[in-house]
Length: 601
Image (cartoon, rainbow, N blue to C red; front, side):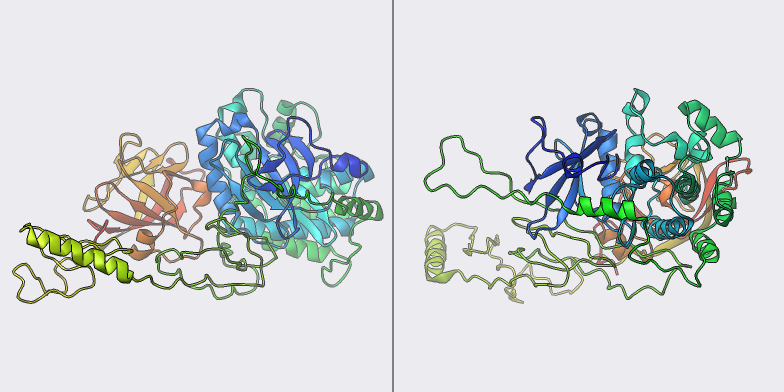
């Protein structure tokens, strides 16, 4: 999808009026204007109830009809909600299940890099260095959430007064899964693809580094490093030829040349990119002044900051509404997801992350405000009755609900019912407690009432109904070859040939882990989260497939089988490019017959 603010010109061209075929509200968001349209849908301007502008991207119906797109889109939105970086536009709300999938991000009042270069030409070297350093920080946070952007290009970089904003991360992954990509719908821009993308090979975070080098060359020269023309011609040059860097300023050549290395492993890391930008900078440190952009682009930002006022809801009717009147849908933001822990080796030490709370009963009343977690000021609504939004800085705890007693009337009804049934000589007595809905049968006592030791069926053993905790069995350094599977009930667990056929865990030759077995599921644990039996039991972010680009070394995956076993997979590495077979090396811990037993300590 295009950036939030495509196009040039004045306010009327940037904030286009809604057409007859445009919706006026989306899930309670009142639309103020249309910001643009692209290959995946339309972008609209709206506001939160507190008045903060947001950009809402509504996916095209053709994509929404593709079940594989919806599945991947839901995965990517969930991951994107954990991205809370200074140089990203945070995803604050989404609906992946509705008739028209959509997502809302913070509105960035600035032109895209593509629009800025087309309108005003190439950028100064100092601006390009600050641009690339900010984009590198954005990629650090995006990759830390397990996302590869896949479509990093000038139209997906917005220019704000305090730095760039990278948008649309992960959406290309969902679009690549649809049949539409083979029927005339183009996702991504060939001029900014990496060689491995053009050749159909595995995509990794290094793919985004190649695109970063292309963006740097474009920003500094005004044209793509591998030229323009037909898609096939551009992709051929990306794979087989060297870029044209004759117009790239000397201070940027090391940065661009290293990022555009053909082999992914030869490209610099994000930390190295920032160091290169620092060395090429004329100052002793990278400083981002208020006027880091040329004057004409800053003027464009001023125009885009003058967004139309929020659309006011209609006044309440003075009399009864007419027949057939349907009020607009309530505002319904989704639950925010905690930001991912950045990968080790970069940036300041991470802040303390509180442990996952033990799941308990949901509060009766959930109309409250709470802050988001992580850097930035991302608008992060909660989910509950009415789904009222929340803002950072003003947490309000849920209002506790006092326990309700049955009352005099309930007690009278209870005693009367018991007396009537007892007089009738019934062999089974039901004691009904109004307001709690509990009942016992065969003379038993309600929940929480101690049984008499004289009862013939009393069992005072503290472990009578509790199975002992299963013992973990560990298997180290399993080389799981593509096209093979693992069965967690085997001892020892060894790879067996076959990737389709109801297997519990298989390495599909399509480049993903697959839980095909009946009622089997996978859960990708957050980066830095320590896997355990308790963690695997508690986490419910189920999926059937996990692509390998989401599985860097050290990442852990919970496997639950339909046969009652739970496994924890820890990725240790992948085969080299020149290896005779394609495989991944994993450590596996298995808790057999552990589904539903014990407490999961």
